[in-house]
Image 1 (tube, helix red, strand yellow):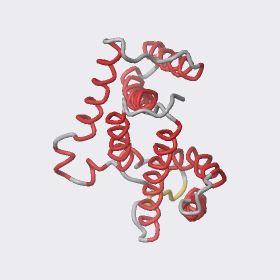
Image 2 (tube, rainbow, N blue to C red):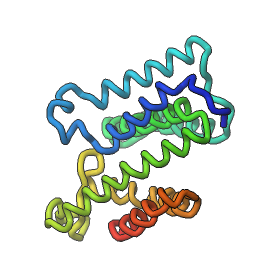
Image 3 (tube, rainbow, N blue to C red):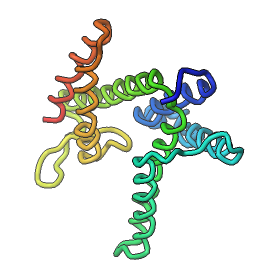
Length: 205
């Protein structure tokens, strides 16, 4: 992590805004924002800024083994498309994967200090908690529960509409909630973690 600086402050806060836009699926909840494709426009703007910085030599993805593994995995996924049985569907899935990978690139560029990392994790935790709460509210009202794969299952909203997508997000986020709860030293923020974590576990069950 770099020392504290304000050089990338604008992009960092823009990343936080995009994280909220993407995970809450606000474009599908507010028609006017969906009509102007707010997620696409904001995401494309951030990626354009990153590629412009790379082109000008102001930023480069370091040699972190995680970054290398991520790029190799994306390349492997792309190479396998021509060999897939359903090529069109494989390409569609790859485009969805590319969207998530774009967020990864935004995080690598936007989060440059330990303080920024902590701030980003908190924003991520809060928006994911919102998704959990939203899905749970559907469940207690008897909404979005449909027969799927041999059982009645809960469906979320937007890209998390399918039970597998919703469940995968929940299960994948549990470590963040747990370690955030353990590591948070502030007695102002710790109660938030203590309240959020049990609710996540209940929704997962």
